[in-house]
Image (cartoon, rainbow, N blue to C red):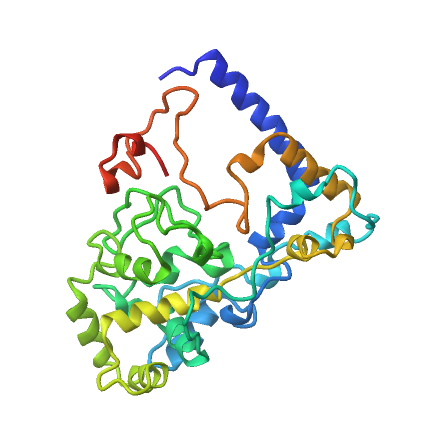
Length: 331
């Protein structure tokens, strides 16, 4: 399908705007690079393989033989290093209260009312998140597609399932996901607890046949018994599929990435340079918060691909969930 002249102009303008904003608005990338973020839930910044080995040690296994180390959190660039020499001071006039109200700082914890996020629950969730034995071939874990030292994704155009075949979509980041209005690109899961169940039972992803197969597998691993008992005290049989999903979600609820931007939004205006503040003002002036707004600067709205001109895409998005015509190509 050929691009129409209007779409070409729009894409050209968006490219120019992106160049300007990346130069002036790099502080927001710290959230993605874990600059100043909460790394407690992802160990001390060791490699993915080191973290996996740590989690699996508790349940009596080791990392897969073909696993390769990936970049550590310590190697991810922090834009503080690039802005340390730039002047920081008061809030610039262009950033009015109305502009600042478009965003919110990340919270220290993301839990619904009456939710008990215990350390035992997070510890169990971390072990499960890294454990490839939750897949039918015992080679695919949550971390396979949501690599914590690769921004919570696998970096592929579309993710690869346990059978080596590509799935239909790429992996959304697991960082700050608990703050989104829904999970998956089409919003088919309301919470991270609901989301945690689906890939394990998906024939194209981790491939387990049913919850009973997951439970049988976990009960066959002696190391998990004390972890489940500590995380779910008082339950006669805590090793059930529902509890496994709750534990994985608890770990994900800790995957938050606060940065200088959040401290700035909380009132410490010295956290951003004047140049960065002007970048934020430009970001707002150009209308970027139409989509990129709120505590996550995105992930709070459903949007349609192809608003200006028809977009060549086969995936019908949220329409596949709701069957509502207006949800066609909405993500």
